[in-house]
Image 1 (tube, rainbow, N blue to C red):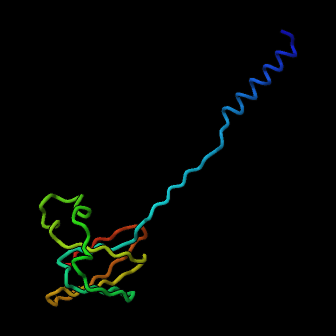
Image 2: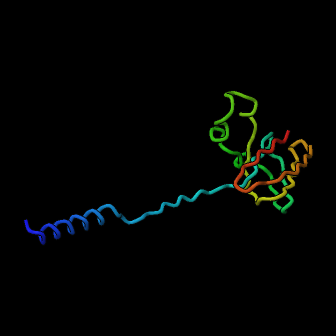
Length: 124
């Protein structure tokens, strides 16, 4: 083999190695829906909730969270599992929650909402 053939073979080999080892760079972006919310817990059905941002709602049985989803991290058959739970999306910052239970008892709570966090508020 002469020098010209060796150089050509070496050049072809280098081109194959360089192009074979350098793929197109890829970037993967995963979007997460970070929910900023308040989970109200207690005997809620028939009660009325009012937030300081003007939102108000009478809680119906249809508004309750699925017990299977909200009880994943609790002890089976605990008192907590039997309580009503309703999730509300809210804006970060200070929030005043006023709740009037079905029997007329009024509860006011002030909490600070952190972005991307679900705050649990027990209303007994």
